Amino acid sequence: MKRPLRALVATGLLLGGSIVAVALGGNASADTQICEQYGSTVIQGRYVVQNNRWGTTAQQCINVTDTGFEITTQNGSNPTNGAPTAYPSVFFGCHYTNCSPGTNLPIQVSQISSATSSINYRYVSGAIYNASYDIWLDPSPKRDGVNQMEIMIWLNRQGSIQPIGSVVGTTTLAGRTWEVWRGSNGSNNVISYVAPSAITSLNFSVLDFINDVRNRGAITNSWYLTSIQAGFEPWQGGAGLAVTSFSATVNGGGNPTTPPPTTPPPSGGASCAVKYTANSWNNGFTADVQVTNTGSSAINGWTLNYSLPSGQTVTNAWNATVSQSGSAVTARNVGHNGSIAPGGTASFGYQGTLNGSYSSPSSFSLNGATCSRN
Image (cartoon, rainbow, N blue to C red; front, top):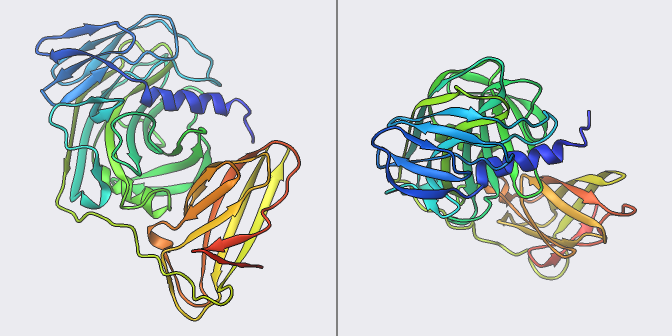
């Protein structure tokens, strides 16, 4: 079922993990009370705890301990078909220029030999919220601004709230089965892993979730892990919710990734064919694109260029890195589909918004050579 207000919820979830926190300075050695909207402090000389009350003007306060924090006041109340009131959380890494002390993030995914984390939550009844764990990644080593990929792990949800997008299946990670959601909020892609029942503690490999997202074609090993965050998104109530302990460690030791070499098709005619299948509705569309190598040599690394008709804007993509400038679209392979053998096919897809009547692109070029249409 289409939910027209999910765009608002999506924006809320993005901002919940992305609003800049204002550092108060120093380490929290005794309990520290924070009521400032974006106030933050440091614990254990290693992690930043932030109040991050972005979605309401009502007061929210957190009590920061040496090991975590508790929401002590949460007077906001937002409808469940809209955005949450806040994202009080603890994080390791960089978050809108606020970097945790001594962090080695951002770090390229290919350079990570291990990434582990543990979390312990305390829940309350009668409130509407999720207990959310955010993992942020970007193609560049960003320390500021919105990252392009958000991984959310929902360890608990109470009330009629849901992640961004729609269900795309289930998977088993960290010894548990998760419901997998996928979507976009217009600024970044989101893949969410939702626990079927409340989890109060988890000790797991962050890298397992990153690898699963990579295997879904949403990122490549050349992307960067920028931050790991854990906290709550309350819609209504939430006083008493607490992160009682948190840890995160990311170790290097892998090998940096360089982009795969690009082998242009031989000159003297097209050696590629494109099949473009679209489904449109009044204000949006999806497209499935199949690129076939019709030449006699393998293509190792590919870039597909074409123009979208006026009124079409790409919002999120899968199995390719898709960018748009004006009407011009550039789609580049991801790690698992960079090589196309003679006669082989690589596929990707995307979703977009539509203003006006729909029509499909008329021509395509692969690595600079014009493709025929299937």
